[in-house]
Length: 267
Ligand code: DGL
Image 1: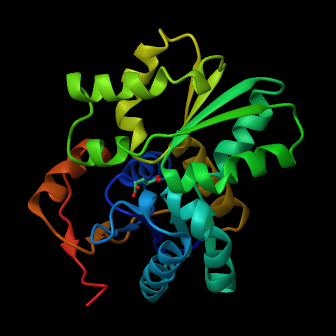
Image 2 (image 1 turned 180 degrees about the horizontal axis):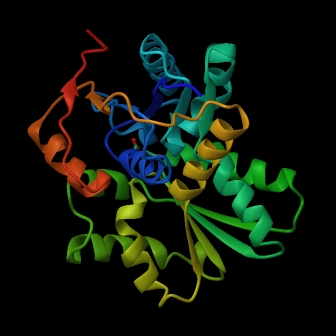
């Protein structure tokens, strides 16, 4: 048993979709969430910039004694997971959002056509392709960068005509024309999952990594005897740049509005 918190970070508040799934799966665990809103979006940043941000955020989460760090952002998982894992080393386990989704896909979609939508950073890194091909199960991946979606969702446009028309424009791209499943390769996208399902008339599988990540976290804590039996501390939510609208948007991503504190990590 270990009552230390689980650290979770993202470029903004989109990673709260992952935090929500972890909280649902492991209600006794204390969460410490950090949204790097000063640098949002990560999807358009260079690999070197995201790596530098990730290391500094991990220092903060380690100072707060996190037993496990979850990179709740596909762009940061693509750009910085290997580096962060080495940097954090034995101080904490690091889980990214890509591996649990890839495990699920390779087990369930052998010899199928799988689509991926995500930020430029995630898609251009080819990380999903590399990880899927390593498993050699005959999956053909069709990836499309959809850079307008994360900022649109973060701004609150996710269930109306504006978002529908942008989404339809992306999903009608010929790259995605023959897919059997679609990976939502960005932690903001669970908010548009219903629209994606509607676009495909519920005929293909839509893969949202948050529940697979929560299961991976649970499995790791159980296997390493690190589970908390009883909640001792409240969850904490920090952002590197505070605006009232971020706080209001937590309700959409986390299911309830939470108090977020400004943590000036870059000053
Ligand atoms: N949440 C980030 C991800 O999963 C996307 C948002 C961003 O570009 O910062 O890729």
